[in-house]
Image (tube, rainbow, N blue to C red; front, side, top):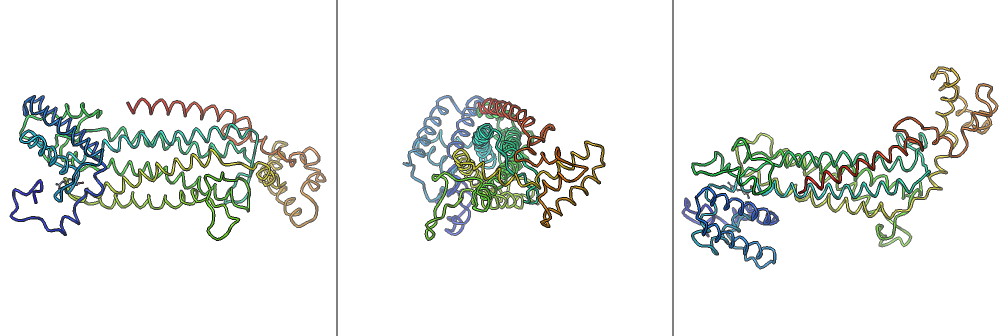
Length: 463
Ligand code: ARG
């Protein structure tokens, strides 16, 4: 068996070794990036005079064919193809002969795999940011369409104060805005080419890492060859940014589970985004929302697993680093799927605003407004809290309705009782960033502007 390293060895590698150590089962996915990296490397080798123009052309043609074979599924993998780098180089050498055998000049799989994974991460983080922006767009549209609809705002999952539905939806929107920021930030930091670092120390050959960096569209090249081949901060950071998206999806998911439960009846899923029960004919289940909740757990595992792999690793490359890819691929795939499923779910969900209003119109929802009414007349808040708390207790004990008790109380009276009318409390949340109509109108504009800027920023940084 002719591995890339067979020269120094007497016999063939054991089957068990190959079975345990090979990464081709998952890193085949890096083929387009591996080919792009090889094209840039071979062009650089030509520019610095290590390959003739004819050799460069031969290798590039072989890379084209290899790419096409891989894309069409015709590519014949050999038993010794332990990873995608080996597979591509073997095929290029078969096709281009001695010129192909020069492809690996001044290069190691250590700098090669780091370059491939950075290219992959750059592309995927941008694509996911675009998906997240599409989800935010749906939240914005639903918030605008929600108009004056309101529902209870909860603390401790107990009804606290009414909030506009638009406000509630945008609370999730702003969390996602920070995610877009984090994805952009992680992407900018990983935009560094490690090619030219070699196995660990650079090369005696006249390589020019700036040429490969520029060819591949990286913003910069590495500064230190040992750091270049062993740095997986970028994978950990990408995983964190993506896991935070997943955690935000899980919070949205929990909201959807709650809103669609028969206990609240606040929302109804579109049939296309709900599932049925195999036994209970009446059921309509929010499985997307539940899986968004659950998958966040698995993605947290991917992140912490990688951090544990990196901890205590000596400089520089160690095979441990091969364990970076499966968590990254899994997390990227799950976040893509999750964001898209949640986008469809939210764009088609029906909000039952009457049920929301009925839940928010419980007179006790206005308790804070009563206390603030007393404060506006000069009563210290602590005292006002006691006055209103007393009335709430009496009404809960069945003495009279809260409205009657308020009306009868000389400190409050008929004007204060009007605060308890359905729909009134939410209109009184007037402070900046608050949950009432005025600040929410301003917030909608701010959110719209932020979304536009993020979309533009992302389109620019993708080019
Ligand atoms: N499959 C390896 C990885 O993913 C490629 C680098 C192998 N380098 C080595 N020295 N064995 O990390």
